[in-house]
Image: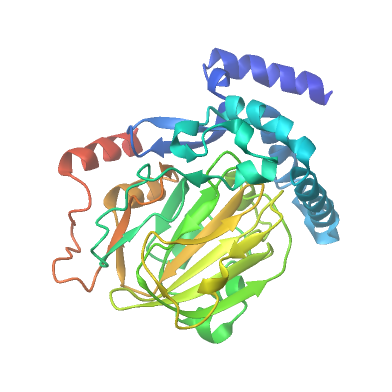
Length: 356
């Protein structure tokens, strides 16, 4: 029965001209091209997500059956990806997702011993330039991903993150620290399995606190995030608190997901007092999709207009490490009514897509 449903959906999507590029996921705006597209994703995975995360089946979460199944599956998958035999999966994976290996070092697939080694591949120098590198008032995108941004946590919950208990306090399990961000601004970065899975600091500052929290490995696909299952506050996660002169305190939370074996903040950034510059590699995820929440204190950042417009329309923006995220509002040249992070021509093109 499931096979027939899969075949029917394949036929429909092919005639919509989405199947050749595996574009069956949530809609995103490609920031580099200005084109609206759908995320690359296997059709079978999409069907499974629709089956698991809908009002009729979310009750399974109350029995922990879904949680136990996904947790055990993720641990098993993580072990398999570290075995030499997993190398055979790399070529097919690259071809399926049309990954441009020219962006990575090494670019030769034979240089990767296991799929796990390939998954945490590094960017080649110069492929991801840092926006306004020497200006600490400009925050940057921290990973290759799809991003949504919101001026307040309640706005994020209303439009995107539907889990019943999402708050910054519940996310980091710290009442005192969470209270500093519950009325602040939030950027939510979501990585898919085909993405580069190293993540970088969005700001320049000093590490003030590090904490690791155990948890589960739910999917972070938009279908899951927009369900009533408490995804982000249940999954395994690490966070650092970064003290900055321009943005105040900035909270960076790396969140695991299905098939992720490790959420890993580099050891040198686990110690209070360590200095970090925007663009510095902060940590890595292992195999699977994953998510990052970056929270800013109230009125300390103005996100770029194109990101805000798309987010308000429930459209993700496909971005790369180093792109502009926003500007500190304490900057003497910040403009609460506009800003100069993108050109007027660029802004019109993004806004037109959102309106459509």
